Amino acid sequence: MKTKLSLIVLALASLALLVSGCAQGLMPSSWPGVTADAERAYVAAGPFVYAVNLNTGAEVWHFPEKASTANPFNAAPVLTVDGQLIVAGFNKVLSSLDPADGSLNWEFEGAHDRYYGSVLATESMIYAPNADYNLYALTLDGDLVWQFAAEQAIWAAPVSDGERVYFGALDRRVYALDAQTGALVWEQTLNSAILASLAFGPEGTLFVSTLNGSVFALDSRSGRTIWAQPFDAENQIWAAPVMFHDNLYIVDMAGLIYTLDPARGEESLPRLDADSAIVSAPLIANEVLVFGTEEGTMFIIDQAHNPQTVRLSGQLYGAPAVSGDLILFAPLETDDLLLAVTLEGIQRWGFSPED
Amino acid sequence: MWEAIVNFFTNTLIIIYQYTGQNFGVAIVLFTILIRLLTHPLMARQIKSTQKMQELQQSKEWGDIQKKYKDNREQLAQEQMKLYQKEGVSPFGSCLPTFVQLPIMFALYQSVMRALASSPMQLLILTRAVWTNGEMSNLIPLNSQFLWMNLGQPERIYIAGLGIPLLALIVAVTTFIQTKVTMPPPNPTNPPDQAAAMNSSMTMMMPLMMGYFALTFASGLAVYIIVGNLLSLVQYALLGRVYWSNLLPKSKRQEKSK
Image 1 (cartoon, each protein chain N blue to C red):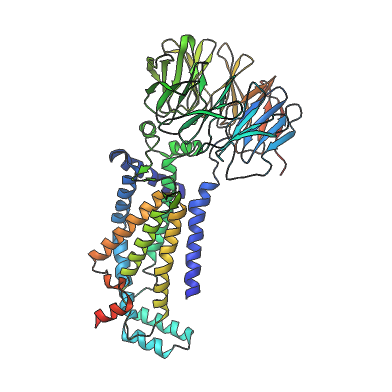
Image 2 (spheres, rainbow over the protein chains, first blue to last red):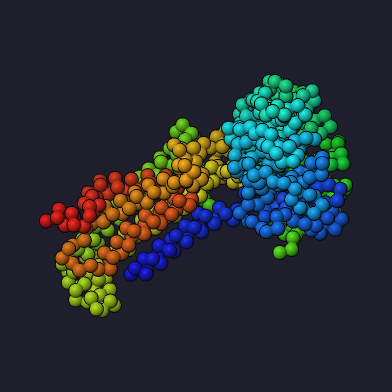
């Protein structure tokens, strides 16, 4: 009887682990991020960051040497002006690598939580957003200069005009900090969480999209609202706003693409429909806007506002990258970790790492 | 089906959260009370069924069978089954509500994790699971702080750099008390049997198992277990089935019964 009881308890415990623990553990926490230079693409996808030869689609190196599935990389790697590749993952560590061979330059271990967003690298500084509510400012040698605590996690890369650093957080606030000292210049509370980066517009305007489908234009000098919600998206907004040919482009999770007049916030061109959720900001490449959709479509808008779709594969959650005539997507739910396609929809190669 | 249950729980939690001062800890407590109210008829049946079985196990007839067939386990089991049938007692009747509680606990755990959505993918799933999309966006991120704990993380209190799992200890203690005081004291004239041994094992295993869950999983689950244990005590007390004397040492208990 005792053996039976032990077996029952063991079975229940296993079931509990299976249902409660493993079910959560198997789900990816975010989506892969990609960036590129003239020679290589760098994709942060799961346990590794891979460097992939742009001509052949073959792996050049991966980092770290040993996989840790518990600490994946998802934030798109960032290249600095002095030739470093900054990668950040769930292991709370920010690493500087040599883009040529993946060797480690330095590490910053001061954060207490995961990195979901990419860093911003300026000419002299690195600004790293972390889920521990802090924005960390480092020198290009990885030394901490200052840190600033928001009220909630920061999931997206900040932007800077050289003098100040601006970012939004899940606490619904937009923060403007002195880029050198981290001192708070102003903060503005909006109506919902801010998941994406901000965008600069003409004359120091700062555009912010919030999760509940609103868009705001703020004066970057004072934080004053220039316009707020002259329009509401039909669904949530996860992607950052983008300025393209004097228009402000906003995308929502229903796949609708809105074109706004940046001065007044009113819709200036007819809406376009990508028919599938768009999670990340579009890429401006070769005079067109390129979006990835959840259903695996590359959606392109040209200068004349004409749409074009190209069916790829997987779920294209992350923002695409560009190098030459190649558009790079890091899809989920497909065999390839990285796809290289042309704007005409020709797939040059797909990269899937060897086991 | 499972997803539908988790989504239902998630939405219920968020609705309670929305209307109770946006405190997720309070939402879990109220949700637990709601679940207990809904499952009370089942629980009451279990308590009565357990009581009936335990009374049977304390009867002279049961004791006689134990003595008579102590060297023949197979025959003993058959005779016990006959006695169960004769008295109209189902030996599994008391297990059913426990098996109902476990999926609820697992679904609640996933709901808590889903509602707190601490990563982009979790948030994406959450925003698609909620019934009121627009209003929900205004609530995100949910406030995961409750008293001293972050409900989405396992709880520790740090004293001199040492992480003490206070909540896991409270879970283990309340589970122990709840298990111990709801079991009728054994009949001293009957020889110790398998059922008594099983009860004794349960008293030790359940607190350890629940304590382990609280130690490992998000503290929101521990809050659910603690509130659930306290409510169980209330339910048993309302039906007059709490034996506080079980908490006394054996010698004192025997003294008291004399």
